[in-house]
Structure formats: structure tokens, C-alpha cells
Image 1 (tube, one colour):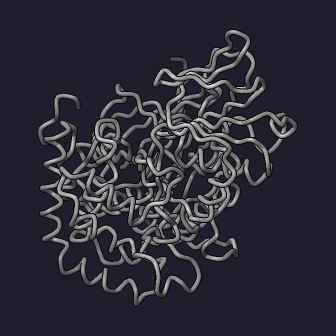
Image 2: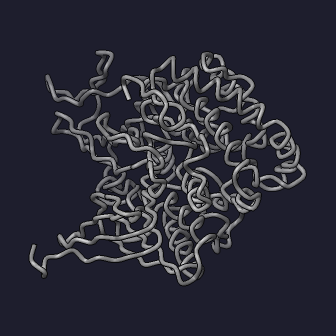
Image 3: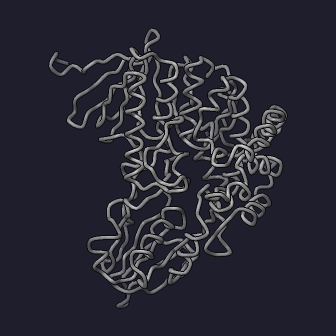
Length: 493
């Protein structure tokens, strides 16, 4: 390679790849241990901070009240009621604000528009190689590398369908509230039953009252009721279930084998759903008011999976996995709102921490907590405390579990969280927990939180052993990676 084509080389104390919610929580943790004259290099393939929020559909909103979606304990400057569900623009502005706040504590050099390609470790230094959109190469030499991939969510493409008489679109590439779809009065068919489908149905029903909006919902998704878990206003003083109490309830019920029974209980106690037969749950949250608006506004709900849309015998038909068909109006809009977390089975396994302890990877093949923000926050603290290799956290193939055991999936994650948070609690300063604004319990007034805090402090080690047995049972039942790094790797791993 000629000198003019040689990669640019930059040095720093920490390199963080990914400027979404996971990466910014890792940056928050780093800022607690680094001095003002130390340097963090923040890299992202996108043009700005925000991760998936940069790419997703324009009408997306947070599932939870906005104060609990942040980096560490950085407060929002929005000036809205605490129950406000922030919009895409508001979230992106806040995540930009988080970077600016953290840059006042530690030097942060931003490299947006750079794609991470590879890494190697030589003599205690991690070298991360990145490529710019123009083909330029960058090598970052760091003492520590944090790869904050999170759920690796990518935009949804329109569905490939056979029909030439319908419009196949995706909310990520077509704002359903404007343009051609707004001018058209043709029916809309939303494909999918999860949170994206609910957001899309709600946006269409409220923007175009009376328009025919239909849903192809698969086997149906149910959601946690926001009203029961995160009630707004003064009701937080006497209604709702504090999340740590819910976790304790699930911890007592789920033994690693009885997910159907636990699901029936959870759905009846905390669930909200469009159709009685909905039985898919992937930790989404929906309010009763949102659910009622969507339910009242939908024209038709089909409990099946779409295979294709075809033109034949002068008509246009939806073709379902079951073999049934349904004639639809030519010119209809087919909107792809199917699942966003699609990790191919050849996605390489990478442990959440490297053998040297210098590289952290936040990904869905070695998850240690339920959400990327929490992983960025707590793994970041353990990294800088030099405890990440010695604490026997359980890692789980998050995506493999979701594929093999979709009913058990959310309840296994609850067990994983309780097991690993117990270990983390015993190995970090108390301020790590008190500074964690991501904690959903903090939605409630202190008097309502205290019983859960006391219960955790008094029982978490005993409960940790129970959850370890649950996780070991899950590993054996489903033959997935689930255990401390270095334990037996399942045949399908």
C-alpha cells in the first residue's frame, strides 16, 4: 500500500462502535472512570447519534415514558409531562444532547459515517479497522473496545409480492401520513401484529378516520398494559405494579418448563390485546386507550401469515400460509410491519467479553440482560472496574431462544435479568444502581419502591440460585447457549 493510501491511525483510551442507546450508556459508564484529558472515539456508520432511531419510521414513539430512555442519569430537556411518549425527532435530539453532556466530562471524538470492519489485539492494544463511505480507511488503536451493536435492527424493506395491482411499501421508506398513500383512498393491509403494526394502525386510523385499515396479524401479539405497569400522574401512588414486584412474581412462577402456564397468567393479569387468541409476546407495551382506538378503527383482522399477493382470474388475492385466500381491492396498499429483529443463523457468535477482557460486545448472540441500554450501562461499569471476566454472568443466545422457544422467550429473559443483576449488585458500587435512570421502578414514588428494594437486598442471592437452575433447565431443554462463558457449547450454537 502506498503512503497516500495508508489508513489514518488514531489512538484513544476507549473506542465505542455504535452511537445508539447501548453505545451511549457505555459512554456514560466510561465517563465515570476516565478523566477529562482522556479520549473516547465514538464511531457509527450513520450520520448522527441515535442508532436505530435514525433509520426507523417517522411516526415511531417510545414504548415507555421518556425519562427512562436516556444515557445513565442524563435528564431530558424536553419540558413535557413525565408520561409523554417521545417522538422520533425528540429521541434523536435527546441522544445528541447525551453525547454533548458526556463530552463535557471526557474528550469524545466523533466519527460518523464510518463502518466498523474488523479488530485485532496486539501487545495489549486493540486495533479497530473502519471504512468510510468514500473508501478511506481508519485504524483506531485503543486500550478498550466496546462494540455496541444492540439488537442490530435494520429498516424493513417492502415485501416482495407477485401482484402488479397493489402497492407494496414499508413504513421505513414511506411516510404513511403523506404523499401518494394520503391521496389514495384505497384500503390498507398492514402485515404484522407487533409494535410496528400497532404504531402503523394507530397512525393511519387517527390520520384518516373512516379509511379502511386491515391487519394480517399472524398468530396475534399481546402487549404489557402500560396502564397497569406504568400508570400516569398521581395514580402512580396507588395503582400499577412496580416492575421489580412483577419480576419477583414471574421469578416465583417460572421454573424453566411451564412457560405456557406462566404466559396464561401474565396475559390475563398484565396483558392487553386486539384478539382473544393473541399469544405472541415479545416485551412490547401498549396502553388500553391505544388498543381501543386500534380495535375500533380496524375493518378486518386476519389471524394468519401472508405468503404472497397474486393477480389471477381477474381478481387480486392475499394468499396465506394456511392455504386460504382473500380477495382485495386493486390499488390496495400492503405495508410490511413484520418483525425487525432478524438475525441470520450464520451470524457469528461473539462472547460479551473477549478472553483478554479488553473487548466488550453487546449483541443478540451473547446477551446478558434484556435490553441493550442496560447491557451498555452495566457491562461498561464492570469493564472499567476490571471485573468483567471474573463475574460469572450468564450469557444467552437471545435470537436462538426467540426462534426455538418463542413462548418461553420473555420469561427466560426475566430469569436472566434477575440472575445477572444479583451478581452485578455484589460487584459494583451502590452508586451504579442509584445513578441508573433506566430503572423502570423509578417511575414510582419512593415509598412504593422501597419494599422492592428491601426484598431484593434481602433475597437476591437466594433467588439467584433459583434463577440459575431455571436457566440451566432452559439450556438443556432447548439446546441453546445459556451459561457463563466457557461452559459447554450446545450443538446448535
